[in-house]
Image 1: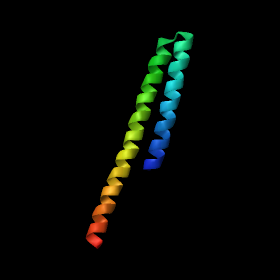
Image 2: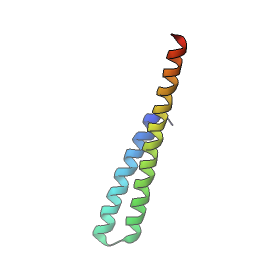
Image 3: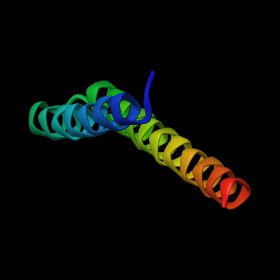
Length: 69
């Protein structure tokens, strides 16, 4: 998956996870709250992966530019 795709999926998982936590809290479901928290963390990891891919690409581009100049 591309860095943009990773970040988009991550932000979606974060939002869905937060929503599940809210619903779980409203209906008194500890299980739903836990699943929501897990999904939110998964989303944060996906966003982090996307940002890491961006940083690696930026670094590779900088090295390529330095070698070509």
